Amino acid sequence: MMDTIDSISSQPTAAATFTSTSTSSSSGVNPTPSPQSRIIDDKSPLCIPFILSKIAEYNALHANEANPRPFIIGLNGVQGVGKTTLVKALAETLQEREGLNTLVVSIDDFYLTHEDQLKLAEENSDNALVQYRGEPGTHDTPLLLSFLSSIISSQPTHLPLYDKSAHHGLGDRLPASTFPPINDPTLSAPQHRAIRVLLLEGWLTGFRPLSPGTISTKYLDLKSYKTLSHHKLEHLLFINERLKEYESAWDHFDAFIHIDAQELEWVYEWRLEQEEQLRREKGTGMSAEMVRKFVDGYFPAYELYEEGVRQGVFKGDEGKRGRQLRMVVGRDRGVVEHMVI
Image (cartoon, rainbow, N blue to C red; front, side):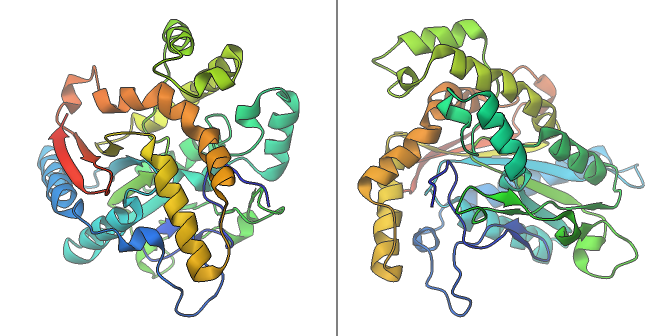
């Protein structure tokens, strides 16, 4: 199986009442809890009140509108910090306690089809960053923007699904006939009522492109940035250019949640811990060398763009000041500081 930038799933993404997430278990009955599920959730007590306050502000602002567009949340978090636990708790609160029809969507569901990914890789055969899914440029941004447009206008649409296990782990989008309908008033399930809150999560959600000069400066700073020099400057500039296609999606965000780490290098250790746990529980998991290569695949984007998220995805937009919550975790994944930006 090919190691790719995101976690490989043995099952296609599945839509539930209010959430669409990839599953990592193929066992079917009473799966062993994932390592992430054992992380103590000290993020929800910070995040949920923050989001509820922003929704209240949004509702007050649009109180005279008969059908205001859904409130849209972006969420970015490094792997292994408890993002899955937080998303579940937030969605359940909004859906069940607040009565807000909530849809959770992963940007993973908008990866290019297998055929289009192969074409991208062939056209850029010397660029290791786009040989497999994950980096900016490996998503179907027109599909993402079209989906968001339908959600915003409360129009019927379908949620794309992506199977990471297809083609021996290279992945592929599932047939359109399998996409669950959203906002379809002819159907009775909750997801067919008008979506009131949309949460878009992903490891690169909120990344903003940099100027070519800034990328060149980082590229030459070998002391501060460990993995950029593993690639040609022109290849980093390529994904930076493709990242521009995502910005109009980020511009729809009404609030943003950022789960950061004091040291980004801990991602390597957290991933290794997850794989060691999987080996103990299931008898299979990536080796230390495989983990290093796996994390190396997306770490250049962290080195390029994480600082911009820290400064604020709404930076420069005074109307959205105070709409980003940044939570910083320590080595044990516990929150050590938080701030509103």
